[in-house]
Image 1 (cartoon, rainbow, N blue to C red):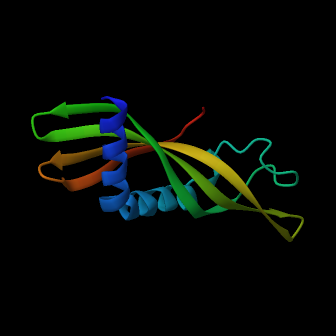
Image 2 (spheres, rainbow, N blue to C red):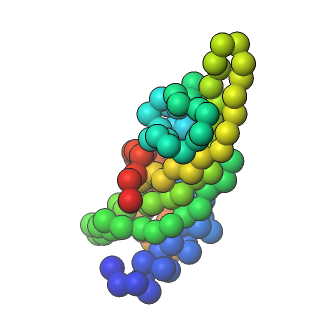
Length: 125
């Protein structure tokens, strides 16, 4: 896809699918704090035992495949995450940034319909 089409797709996703992506990423972060790649992200939290999503920014779409009326694509997002760790009965918290790759699928008609998040994984730039 060209840059303009990619930009148009990003705007459409932001308008129609942002909440679905945000909710899926939020659940992933809360359910998998140990899978986050946050080495060096905090000066005092080494291994977070809890994490929650504060903010998410859609960065770009890539790997776009259109097969008749079905579109699949990867969405790259940047997330601001609050991480927590209990060390000797003290609860430490800090903020960290993590990027994710989200595999998405939708019916492509006049807009995106039946949108779903297929897979979420940590993305390294």
